[in-house]
Structure formats: structure tokens, C-alpha cells
Image (cartoon, rainbow, N blue to C red):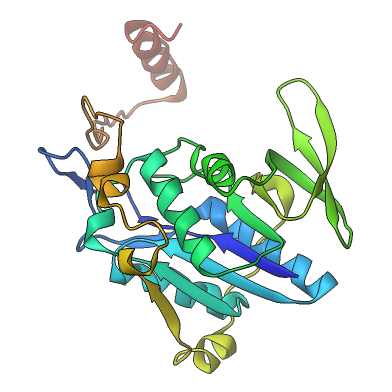
Amino acid sequence: MNIFVCIKQVPGNSNVEVDPVTGVLKRDGIDTKMNPYDLYALESGLKMREAKGGKLNVISMGPPQAMEVIREAYSMGADNGYLVSDRKFAGADVLATSYTLSQGIRKMGQFDIILCGKQTTDGDTAQVGPEMAEYLNIPHVANVRKIVEVKDKSIIVEMDMPDTVEIAEVKFPCLLTVEKDICQPRLPSYRKKMDTKDREITMISLKDFEDKNEMKYGLNGSPTQVERIFPPKVNDDREMWNGSGIDLSEKMTSKLKELKFI
């Protein structure tokens, strides 16, 4: 099997700044990590490769420092890594991002399945995976909570729907977005990290794409207009109380009433 897993580098905490002009996150110089939901997609792909053989490739879109998450994927067992990176891709919304990633995957040739995490912690749209599938003209299934069986030409999965659990069989090539309950991601291996420290990461830019129209990428290709975006406010207000158990319980009750929680 030829498996692709989409991974993303996201802020490691809520201490981020927003560009007041473009409305996008300033990603330079902040703590980062692999998007937590992508870990479940990566583990699902690793289990699939272990069962059926083949290659597991990871692809990410971002600035050069996004190579860190590809290195992390190597330390977990990924075979090949690709970074789609170009300043012309900056500021992309979900539509431009999904188109860019679909072009990057087209550049890499044939595949059997693409796995994505349910969503990212910095966007929470859960749209990029399905939109990629539409651009690639392949079937896709979202909210996958279990991979029931991997066949030679198809895969059977369970979908976690609002009121039901649905089972679907999808022919290859296809795309799945997976829930966090699908598996327990393995920890990175220090030995694999050392063994893969010099492994190549293939860089892909706009000049490598079949479609080189700059108006389809980055801010130019983003129809979404950001009205307002801001980092979450940090509330560190606190009160220290002393007294007996009875006094403290009365104070707590009064405070909850004052805040209209009760």
C-alpha cells in the first residue's frame, strides 16, 4: 500500500499573536507541536502499513520549520516526508490550503489512501480533508472511529455519527479523516530519531505544481474574509480564603450565587 498522512505544525500553547492586517497567526518564534489529531491519523497509517505492507508517507504544508513535525513522524516510523512550502502559500484559508495540498499529492504520484486527523487545534474547521478529496476526485469518509478491515481494493470503516454508528466500504484510492478514539498513538522512538536524523525531506514549491496559477494559492486564493481573529484571553483571577469548613462552604455558596452559577 502507498499511504499518505497529512500532518500539521500548530502552536504549542495559546500564547500566540495575530497579524492585524491579514488576520492570520504569527507562527515565527513560537512553541510548536504536531497537531494532536494528526497523531491518530499517523498511528492508523502505521498500523495499516504493518498489516498490509507498503510505504507510509507524511506531507505537511508550512514554513521550513515545519520540518520538525516531519522529523517527529520519522521517529514514529514514517518512511518518507514531504514539505509543501512557498511564501506564495502564506495566509491560505481552508479552500486554498486543501487545493495546495491536493496539488502536492498529485505531484507525488499514485496513492491508495490519504489519512487526516479530524481537525486542527489552530483552525478547528474540519474541512481541509474532505475538500482535498473533492479536488482529487476521490471518495472520502469523515468521523472514522474504527478501521474494521483493510482489503486489497477497499477499506471498511465505522463512522461516528451524531445519533448512530454507520459502516461504509470505500474503494481505493480514498481519503479518511479519523477521530481521536480510533487508537492510541505510539511514542516517538529515540533510536528511530537517531537513525533518521539525516533522512531527506522533499521540499515542494509552487514551481513543482501542475497548476502554477498564483491566484489559487495563499491569500490570493482564499475567498474567506477574516472579520476578526484574536488570541484567547487569559483569566488568572483568584481569591484566597481562610476559615473553618463551615465558613468556607458558606463563602463558596455566596460566591456561586453572586456569579449566578446557582
